[in-house]
Length: 115
Image (cartoon, rainbow, N blue to C red; front, side, top):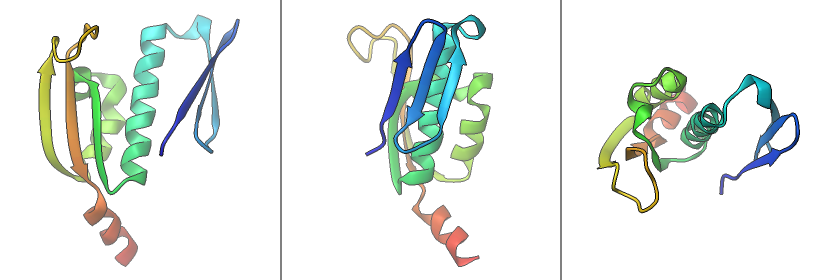
């Protein structure tokens, strides 16, 4: 299971993926919305590296926002099996458009291990 930990303190945020490197983000350098986008990008990218079949519910901005460029590049390397668009009303209390995707990363990993 992949876990992400966020510690909010006076000057900033400490972000750590389970057994991963610690990332410090100063509050004066980032808005909370941008911090959440950063966390979503890191979580998506790390999940694609670890899992064989990955399905995540993400903001629809994953499709075109610049902060997700590297995540999209990583997605293009795998077989994207399905994208579901839930719109703004897909989840109670969530006020942003959301999508989910299902990616098969197993073939890509096999190709890499055979080279």
